Image (cartoon, rainbow, N blue to C red; front, side):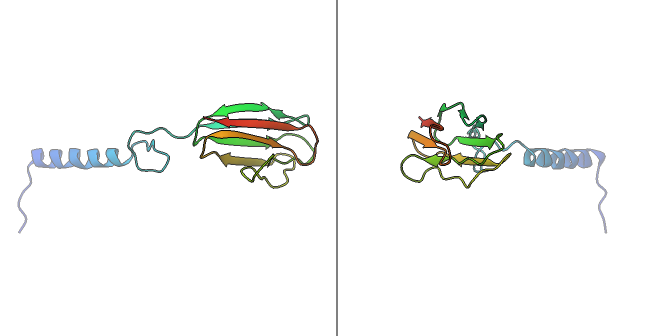
Length: 124
């Protein structure tokens, strides 16, 4: 019927199973979930406070994400000066808008509600 299993065989089998479990629980450091040793993209933050963007100028790498948070009690937007790269919805207090920059370049933007409220993201 059943063959007896030695203590050594059980021990080796247990270690193999534990090793497989540990390997499956490793940190996935790739942005797409495939491993390979690449690092995750970085997040940069811009605060909207006092009718201004802070920082108003930001330099990031391709693939980085910028997250704008409105700390004012009035509505703001993050709107590209030219093109449609940045086009947030109207942002009330505590609203967050984020964008992943997938190409290099300079991306000037403004708030469509407040003249003189502007910023630039430079992507290298």
